[in-house]
Image 1: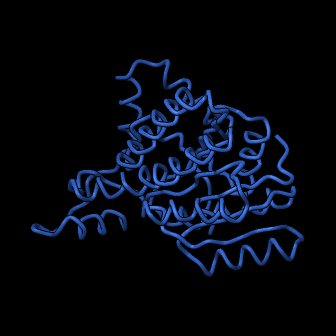
Image 2: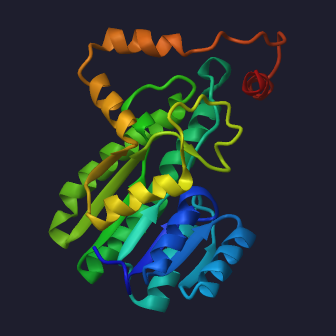
Length: 274
């Protein structure tokens, strides 16, 4: 794929990998539309891209709002007439100890990592069906392949997104729509700086976007990175599940002492500080 002249919508572009990706794509001549909740950061990103000679249009919107996401897609189509590529990058979670959570807490993190994909995915797919093709890319996570300690709801949401997009690959293939899913390991970003999660083999956002650009340029179906983490995940699918569970249990911290009668949110706060 060549990016020059392409209309590319990036969801979750105010910081981290999405922000770096927007700069890279604009630098290769793409007309980039960036969206996220934090409008000042989007405006600054657009200014930086324009000052460097690129084209960027910022639209502030909440990805968890179905109507807001649909309106972003409509606005892009009204302005440019099409969407050649959409990159869905919204989501994330701190360390989540399910022993200190209730159903509402779990559902909230499922929504913030699954619904944000669905809310943009389907209006984008409807548009790509009308225009006769397109490319949808999505930042998933290596955590979507395993029940990772301290990431249960996040892993579950990412696993659900894997199955949803894999089914889309089948049902939307006849319309010329392609899909790329990238699976990063640990990436150092503003959002992950103090999230309470151990981060073995962590890489920078710049290095992560090197991998993402490679996956998009070559229209990879699935792309796992970095290299060592990719093979650890593949090994995990070969080893017996009791062995994998034993290894993962070794990384699980002891349950911190909490005051009797403390609320779930208070307990989670204690856990995140431990």
